[in-house]
Image (cartoon, rainbow, N blue to C red; front, side, top):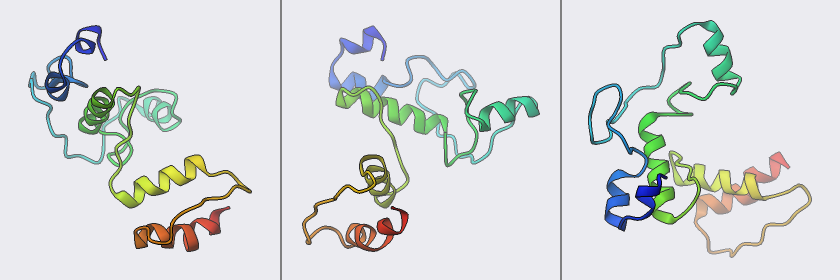
Length: 130
């Protein structure tokens, strides 16, 4: 977040965080919605670098997307965080959390009244990958 946006009200952060300048491709001030799954590479070397995660850039719509990047930056700014991660569903969010925080040999303590999908994930799916 830029220094200028660090000094503004919540409403301004909600409108402008993540896109401090107009869209370079279109000049649009509002964030364009990029509805694409694939991207063109300049050459095979660039594709190799991107898929090898050595060059930052868009690879595939389920991994990166310019619209999603603005959303993540905006949410981080609104929450006072350094970054954010947007995923496609609540199930994906739950999976990311447990895979990031749980360690082999550790324990997860949960109420038995949690959402059924989470319960099934913890009791049946997650143990398969320990």
